[in-house]
Image (cartoon, rainbow, N blue to C red; front, side):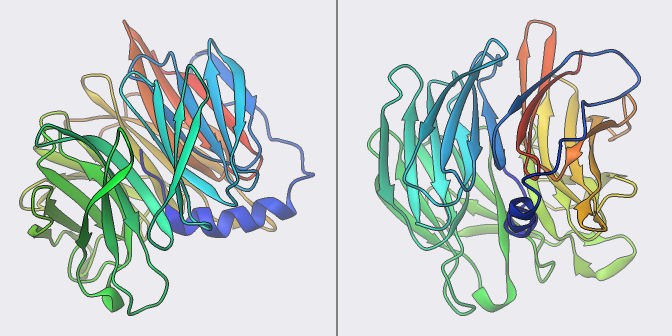
Length: 354
């Protein structure tokens, strides 16, 4: 999962000033589904094994990597990081990779031993995603690199030893703002979301060469001169469609992964941005959104459960705590769970979807 960088950076500063404010309560929606809530100071992102048996949550300013299992916080691993902000885990949840956007570090954590390894990255890593490509277990890290004219890059690491294998350069730095990463199911394509809405909404890169295969010029239906300002990306299991969360309209779009054609769209009313998207089970997609501030506090966020085919809701929106940013989904038998990281009040929520 990948989450919005712009809200995270601004929201963490807000969260520091609100540390003494009491949390707002539990998730609410029309059925009595079970919600598990665990306090994680300055929670910024969450990743889960496929079956939900191992969940990783990172806490930004405390530099923590937290392990959750059986609906309990099992252990907190403290790093030497200043601003850990993103986590990706292997499908079985036994390994987790975390980036620190301030100290420019990449961490690797082991579930069973709690052993922690780290190495340096390019300047200002802001997103990561892992998988397999060409038979190799790899990890992709998106780097902003400080300075308007500095090249934005994607570092390619071998996962076993975190060895740097390659570096991909993204298009003209002065007119792009890469925000999110996603990997195609077969590992052949890397999708990079552009948060600026100029010239492309999503770049599609070859994972073998790093070259751009397609520029998806998906524009807002009402503002055809502005591309979608992409904050989050998820890929359908067969790789034919992308589901992107956008900033300017607070909406989720379903796009053709090759042409960028808009297939469906669902707005998140009274929200400011869709911060994260995730596939849920065989037929649904989750969309997490955050709202603008109300006085000194951001208002409560929303979690939408949508049909993958047409993005129509399958139930009423779920109200979650203020500034929800991180999102993951898991399935164990018929049990579907949404995992949410809430930044301002610092908490992890495990929400049973059905």
